[in-house]
Image (cartoon, rainbow, N blue to C red; front, side, top):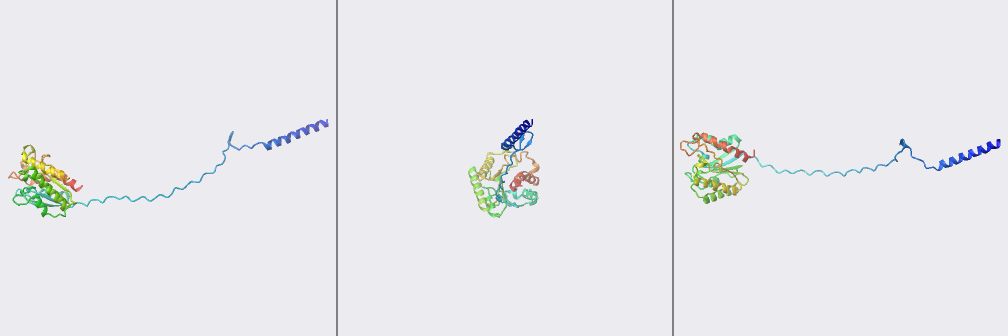
Length: 257
């Protein structure tokens, strides 16, 4: 009986030794973070590369703004210089425009003058320009119905000469050209009066100038007698107010306001 016990104990000891040897040589499993899942191997984060310093933004260059226009030279005929039908210089459309836009207006008009016509003063528009101050902020040329007897070619050549003289004398001054106006509806105008308008318009457009057309806009379509002097030729004070109202939007655009 004792021999059998010794044999059994020897077998158990041998099995224990074998089990220990087997466990020693088995691969070890990584501990799991969840049931049945091995824990992830620790990783080493790659260093974050720092961005190179950005170049300072280049300053944005802005074009210099045009100087504000503080005065306007006005070349015209008796509708600009006034007549016995008006109560004085302050009642004329250039003065009214000056008050409205707070600019100095410099009228350079003469009764009977025009691109070709010289009238009683003996001065054409070109003569009036030569007598004006070239240091001006802007220029307005208005008229003239006095040129209605000239041919298209004569008017076109004289207008082109005038616009070239303005560009030479006052190169920085914008120019507004207002065509001839008549104290009657456009439907009643003669072919000579239409030719007058056409020649001035075409010369202004060819010179790249802004052109306002009182004939096409039919400024005096209503033929309102309250706007016309007793002589039937010149606008009275109310007519001058009306002219200022019609011209004001173009002056506003000229001034860039």
